[in-house]
Length: 87
Figure 1 (cartoon, rainbow, N blue to C red):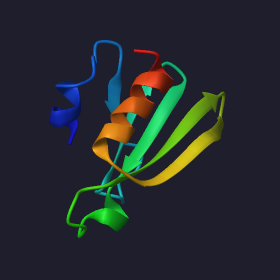
Figure 2 (figure 1 turned 180 degrees about the vertical axis):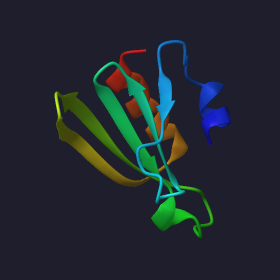
Figure 3 (figure 1 turned 90 degrees about the horizontal axis):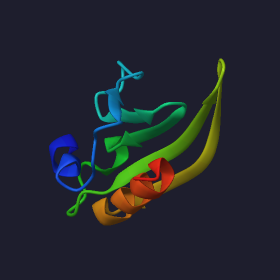
Figure 4 (figure 1 turned 90 degrees about the vertical axis):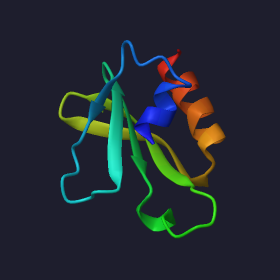
């Protein structure tokens, strides 16, 4: 998934983070205090791969979830990533 995203999104100022070691189907993409949690855990057996994601803002030790989306297409995920990170 990350390699496909790298073909469609400029990762120059983004970093891949893994704050969820017990969830092997989750990954994070972070830029400064903005974090996107992406998971395929509930969607792996679907005919077309879908994604769950949360747009989060890290403020000190607190994480504020700004938006939650479930079962979205890769196209929708990419649109949301670009808008959220303003890239």
